[in-house]
Amino acid sequence: MTDRLIHDRLHLNGEWVETEQRLEVTDPATGEVIARVSCAGEEHWEAALDAAATAAPVIAGTPARERSEMLRRAFEIMSERTEDLARLITRENGKVLADARSEITYAAEFFRWFAEEAVRVRGDFRAAPSGDKTIIVDHQPVGVSVLVTPWNFPSAMVTRKLAPAIAAGCPVVLKPASQTPLSALAVVDILTEAGVPPGVVNVVTADPPGPVVSHLLSDPRVRNLSFTGSTAVGRELLRQAADRVVRTSMELGGNAPFVVLDDADLDRTVAAAMVAKMRNGGAACTAANRFIVQQRIAEPFAEAMRVAMEELRVGPGLDDDTTLGASVSLSERDKIADLVSGAVERGAEVLTGARVPEGPGAFYAPTVLQVDAEDPLLDSEIFGPVAPITTVADDAEAIALANRGEAGLISYVCGGDVGRALGVARQLDAGMVAVNRGVISDPAAPFGGTKQSGLGREGGFEGIHEFLESRYIGVDL
Ligand code: NAP
Image 1 (cartoon, rainbow, N blue to C red):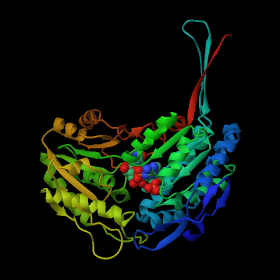
Image 2: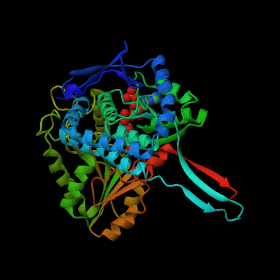
Image 3: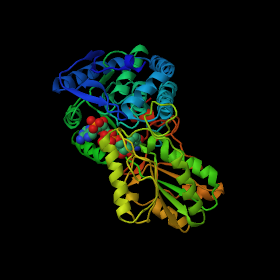
Image 4: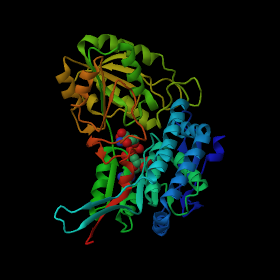
């Protein structure tokens, strides 16, 4: 049962702490209140920082092998609890169980990957070209880190930060999304059972989030901010971090183009397009947000997408036969509906969907639209089950349209001639490019964007370095 995994209090210095002010966590499929979670006030932000600062030398001084073993145990515990944790995600977020289960697998993999990385941080020993000294480079934990995470992957976005922080030897104060704090709080249990010392992981839920994060960033003990969320909030936090020159990692919004070249295999491309679009009900920073299709294949592609979208079964994510769950809230669902109705008013052709289904719950019908390349919908992150398709003449036009705008997180290319598809892929301005695939997120690969999609990389060999400082020691031997 998921209920035994539900925590509704803050986690400070290894203790669960109850407060008077509460925020309601609601199941968006039914409107049912699942929990009323304690919110942090100033004394709790201070207590979280005190605990993290006290734990800093403890976790930094714990041998890498021991930190690695804690993370490996966390991977095992989380994997054993997959089903219950997945149900918890579905209840607070609305996504279907299949997506929630893959999220837990993905989330647990960050513990396994960084358990392996914790013991592989390499330094450097070199002779200065001038011959006057020896250069030694080692890597130190950056120190107290503030982590801020979004609602769309309530577990994986938390472990993608916590695992490298612990691997590197950094204590944290985590502020999870207020719509989905339960999955983050459930991860705390796992880390405690895995042997992570008190004070290393402190969780402060807050409503509103601005004052707590601003306060944390203004405290001289905080050395690092790792944020995942929208570009608008990321920009604001970068401004605040600038005041104390706090180091930042920013995983921000996307607007992924999905380019279909005219020699692409239709069935394979539509299968990839559906995964790229519909994983998480379209609420992924990596979600294909605009389909840029070459003329020769445009009509059959649009028709096949219409058919595939109409085959989805919309309903509460906990029902095993549902393939599209609810949006996280009615207001998120309404944002999607507004984006679609704006495009339709401007002349977009509705191939299917474009409506709010009758009945309760934050649902939106799977939608396919044919839109003009200039339509502003193609410049907005939709974050829902909507596939706008636009047609282009050739590779150059596809590349120019794909590279338009401020986002550069991920791009997709499908084509029959892999050499040609790779040639296009290399001209796309994005931190990640998927060729003939609908999903490429992998804890072993560097995740992150160009342009205003962010700064830094999570996962891969790079991820641990977001929590380490290089230190150079010059020695006269
Ligand atoms: P969001 O509104 O930016 O919120 C993200 C986090 O920031 C939440 O914890 C939120 O708290 C907090 N926050 C909001 N306003 C704040 C403020 N003024 N000061 C400090 N903290 C603040 O984003 P979201 O709607 O949760 O998530 C969707 C966005 O995240 C999309 O743009 C998506 O592309 C992006 N995303 C990016 C990645 C990536 O890896 N690049 C991954 C996942 C999602 P509350 O919950 O209390 O509002």
